[in-house]
Amino acid sequence: MRRSSIFVVLGLLLALTVGCTNKKSSNPLANVGSKQPDKVLFDRAMDAMKHNRFDVARMTLQTLINTYPDSEFIARAKLGVADSWYAEGGTTALQQAEIEYKDFKTFFPNMPEAAEAQLKVANIHYEQMEKPDRDFTHAMRAEDEYRALIQEYPDSKLVPRAKQRLREVQEVLADREYAIGRFYYLRLAYPAAIARLKTLVERYPLYSGADESLFLLGQAYEGEVNAIRKNARLNEVIKTRMIEDLTKSAADAYAKIITRYRRWTGRWMRRSGWRRCISRCRGRRGRRSKTTRRKWRAGRKQD
Image (cartoon, rainbow, N blue to C red; front, side, top):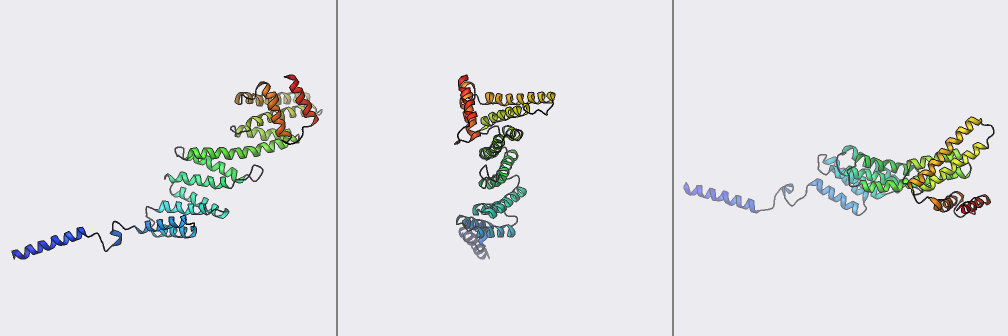
């Protein structure tokens, strides 16, 4: 009896020893070296994206999302679906990518990747942005989306990049406003030119051509003053009041040049400033008119 007990104990010890030393398991999911099925699907999708098989990647990620709704890879899978559309490119794919990125923000608003999704939405419109004289829809959308990122995620490390892109987008929009204002100015439509240029200098103070915009705005105010003086049908009291207001506005525009852009002072302003404005307003390659040349010579004599 005693010997049999000893054999039983030895058999149990031997079984335990074999179980502890054997690294193989009949259940592959219990194996330390094996991968979970959701991780396998995710890795397979990422590999497909690397080889530009975007359809395969999306199908694999959708399988992961539908089969394992509680997986830790759900957020990354949804972001991966959006990234696959973004990487594929093309108008239709980018539209779908924007939808997927916004869905990701809706489901996971507090994840760090939410700021990345917002940046990708803005980049989608940035990459489709046209020149200043073309359709400005994507430029306006890009401006709104970059602003949203800066306001919603002020602590994100992506904010500096968003601010730089926002500055580039605003440069394009400001160029468009300047071109329209200049168009009206050349056709002596001073009220329309004033409206455009005033909006430009107020909304885009960092515009690279803000100094020239302010100078042209002052010129537009002066042009409107001259037009009012020649209008004999206006009441003298009303005419005097309008001239005073417009003259003050012109002076304010010139004053902003001096305070914000100090290089526009003294002789440089009379010479280089006038020359740059005339160059922009009359066409860079065009010959100045006789009236313009007389004004230019008069400005040089005053020096």
